[in-house]
Length: 382
Image (cartoon, rainbow, N blue to C red; front, side):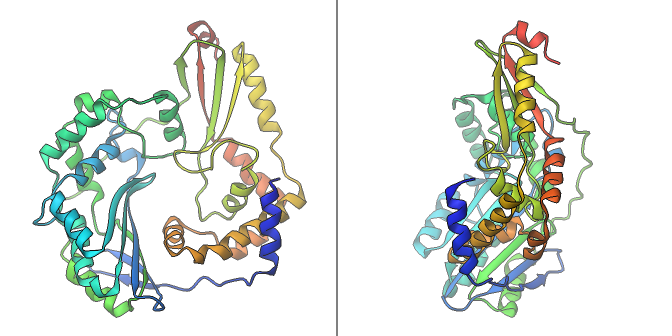
């Protein structure tokens, strides 16, 4: 158990238990839903949004397509402005706006002064509803990514796949055959108001937020019907030939962040496994052996050692409480956590050690393996 855990435990024991405020819910006729946390102490407004992309929505023959989509969108026009003009206006106005690839989809961030809300919401409407893909930007980004080296591509692809992350860079096989139509099909499926999860925090009332969303995003209502999805293969163990000793990795998919057990496992596994239990950086074990059986035996020994005492579970709860107490000190991080999902405090407090270990057992049963070694070694992989 890390020393820092007990340090924060002491702090948490004396800290007041802050209650999570209840947000106002805003629903537009288009299906767009937003949650608003009013905070009028400072004239600042922050937003965090997510347009989810499900793994099965990425064509199996085009892995890494979402990363290319985001790169292309960055260089495409927004509204009646080029990408450069759009960014220049943001810079002049002191508005921070970003569109990035989150492990679960397209993430939108926005921060601005309350007095700039009319301009900021208008630019958000341009980004979400009026940003067609530019063929020139597509080709520029495709070539840039094609010539970029991808060290340890096999391991990176495995960790992203095993943890359900979309942040995998497109491999050469994707870049060689992708067309802008593939990006347009994915964007058409994803960029819909009914899909957007939007969290707003700051100097804004529910009536003001509703009016601004209606004015700038109310007409965002794509008419196209989503095309049916193709069958998507289930993830399987991976084998990769390499020189040197044989190597076995096992990675585990993250638990839902709103799951109470996830909160405690995030603390308890920090000193026992590699990774952070997040998409793209999952909890994992890595072992080596001269034979597949030796590697498998070492892995099973590592898994068998994962158990907790009652005292460790109690300390993990105190550590988690302390971290939640500190969360409001960073408003941007707090808003991001709300969008991601937070477990109920009471549910975390009720957890027993057997329940935590049962959650761990379920997690370990869904792990995926990556075998790496010489051809002769891999030939005997079970």
